[in-house]
Image (cartoon, rainbow over all chains, first blue to last red; front, side):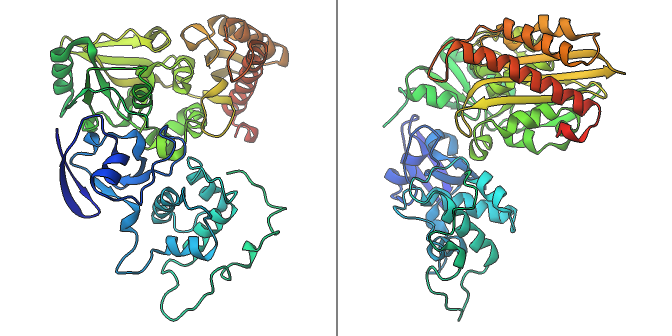
Length: 182
Length: 293
């Protein structure tokens, strides 16, 4: 069958099998490998992208079901060579180690901040509760999202911030007293 | 890689269109709404429909409104919309209790109330909510509408009374002024299916329970309910003894199976304890007490 949808602002049309999953469509048919393919069971959340403006787990959506809809993937975050503030936050606060979960985290976090520009930590943890990170213990992911909330324009022009220096609380050993619940 | 077996894809533009497609393709056709239960089962080849009829364009089935003495919820209303609805929260906190612990926020963007009931998973949270509240299912075919009580809708694991060419268009929940309700679930980790869960509503007349509903899921309770437990409590005063007796009766109504989530004794213990907590919290909410949450 033929499917047409808008992906990151461009209309694309491809011949597909009806059983093709959206995650494989964007990765294998469009070459947008920023979206990661993880657990296959809608648990891990690394395949999260936006469909019609809402984050969805693309391993559990058929490409056929996305026909006529608007898709936004992690590749669309960066603009004119400048990273989205949420991407900058993950850099500033060491929000990733291996990076496998990062695309899904970024897309969920961008959606959260678009709808709640100043979320409490509990709201951040709730928002990413459908996503696994096996490196960071989530602490730095939460810090990264909070950094982006506090820097809606990112680093901006002229403001030089050394990686890791943006948030002193990100220092190792400072997490013992905090509840880890994500 | 998990990939479904091959199937033919159709997209319905209206309820009539969906019914026509179901009639044309026969019993091996399945409706797909959010797809977050059906597609995983198709990947595991536990479900192998020959035709999928996508009903995500049926946005006219996405609504939640007061309709006479009931709350009418369209079959395509998504979990996230149920959780965000102040109307639902005002009348039945049980819905919001349950929705907060159904899967995760991303999955809740896709999953629908109609899909949850029609998939008929024996651990479905909303099935317990529907049974507790004695909701009604409005089902449409080319022959017209029929209404089925929630407690008669499920006939077994993954089985309902739906005919192959029927679609669940609306879930109706009777409004009970002054009712308090609650849902209590124990799960292995955030977003998982329940090890066990219980939901309840109560209405009070002074200190007496004038009406009560109890729903149970993942516990093998027939039709997700415990009518003997309700009969034991209805008309009785709200006392620790009476609530405990109802919880005992609810545990008796269960027939849990041992699995990787726990042994039978543990699940029966949970059935009793979670029913008790749901009843206590329902009473507190009916009384407007802060502790009701």
